[in-house]
Image (tube, rainbow, N blue to C red):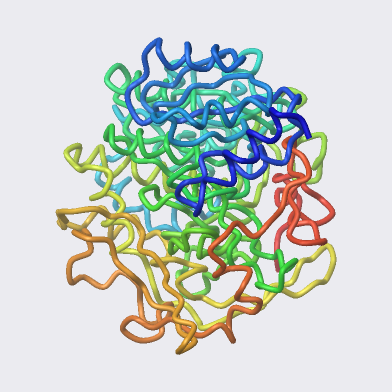
Length: 537
């Protein structure tokens, strides 16, 4: 072993405990001479001194993100320990890969009150960080007020995911006579493209887009960021570069809405889909959205969870997620007229009038983003915590205990329980949210689930100064008793969920080469868009 390798090993061995380890586990497995793109989080505001420190360690700065106090750089893996030894370095992570994860939709979220009172989202800016935008009559010229691409060539939607997301948020339904109108049809759309033709992007691109939204907040009155994308959780949200970015936006007064992910059917570790919420949906501050099935009706009584919707608690931190659910199954939304990749992959989902039928938590997040735009148009003074608290307190909570869904393509059956880790506080009820006069104080950070192994029970630990007050947030149907949820006889393979360390290993920094033991976490089709091709009976 060379002297350099010995010194690196000694430095890393001296970092005892998770909170002291500054280098992500994937990076510590690389050959010392491998060049790697990393995101370095610093403890204080950025200036030229951080770039100089990186240069002294043989690296080169490629970008800096001031709101998140993150510097992107390329460097040899063997020199990372030198960077980590700097006192003001908080954490070093690889620049990982992210992916993209209205027929009866408006009626099923009870949006009628908003439309009857004239609320359209007018004047509210919604930053959509996705695969871009392709022109469509439902989003006329002038509605997309700003476009920029990060790590991609231009703002056009080659993948075909961003356009439907924008349509669900703010399409006017012109091509369908108003039938497929979005939730906030006059909201200002800020198009920030981070995903390429295959639906992939990078952490650094997403962080850059979030920072741009913060910079443009005053110019376009950006009050909402929609993130219908994600990647596996690789460390605590307290160290995750995406976590730093979304928290910076939240602190800047922007409501951040994130898709939970589409891994609720994943039973690779015997967890029945529990513990599969993605990053940055695992951050306690953001509004994490799962997908429900409205079964093609506007009635509440037949709404159930979509079996593919990712379930909490989050790995590592055990944050109670999702926060709520919204329609996400068989959503009809605008699609560009070009050769988008999703249209090529799923031609059977194309409909007349340049519409496309999609399923996934991506669509559910877009529904909530539109709802937030209406809430902020009605009452501009609401802060992000008040918006989140109102949505969760007013959510519809009367679900059956459990359901079974059938995949029409395979005939496979999937069992789902309507519990706190599956539906959160309940289903979006925009009518009730708009009618609420509640002005809660304090944080609306999602609580933490604490597993008591001696009693085989899981309890909720609320944050200090929580905005919930004495108002019930989780109904009795999703929370068994005042504070006790259940034992691990319900969540099979509990060690995979409740362990204190990240439960997977990594064989590659590129793509989704993430493994849970010997079984692939992503199954045979690792693309986050796989859910777009199926529905449920």
